[in-house]
Image 1: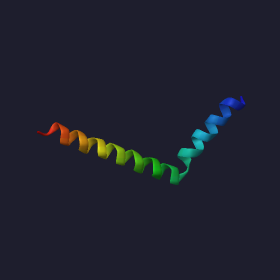
Image 2: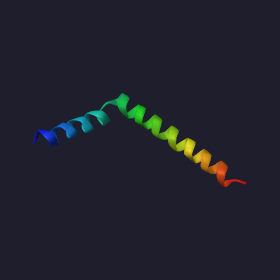
Image 3: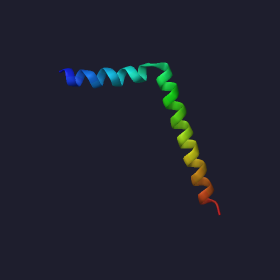
Image 4: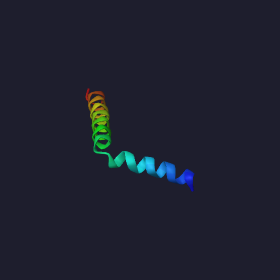
Length: 45
């Protein structure tokens, strides 16, 4: 019971925090944007 409760509480606490969401969203968008730009440049001759 304790093992299942610990990861659940931690996992739920992270997304519940606004700062955590902002940081995750920013990093995710930055990574996606960089990958898209790199892919686009590579695809173009």
